Image (tube, rainbow, N blue to C red; front, side, top):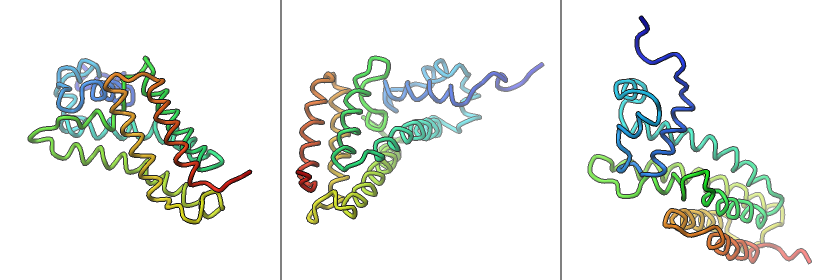
Length: 201
């Protein structure tokens, strides 16, 4: 007789399913019953694997960040600071309104309305968002060193601005804004980054 989890249990697939539940319902809204049903496991297996619900969220966030990092590496590989902002923000407009995905962003949705006992969750999500900002800051520092950004440009502030816009777009998407609305916001933000760039004409 086999004991414990079935051998066909696939941790990455299960985390992808948990990730979607947290993404759609937020941390507080996601129930253990919803999570275990989506993951195809029972509650004892969830607790054995992840410790508790917060432990599962952390694992799901690591999975989400790993997948997102592949995309972020493509973003920061864009040739100019302006192109970086455009690739990131227009990509967000498209991804966060894709019917194949839950609307908005897990790093925003997951922490909405966290109550007693879940105080660490917003900080956990903020830490993951900060990783993206760090990548942008490093890329904008390089852009300034290469003469792509004006001498007066502040790479850290620029990275914070683009990150803040991306979070706002996530809130908009989760509230029902369509792709065109998000692309309009992205376009204005890209123009703001372009204004910090050296004139190439």
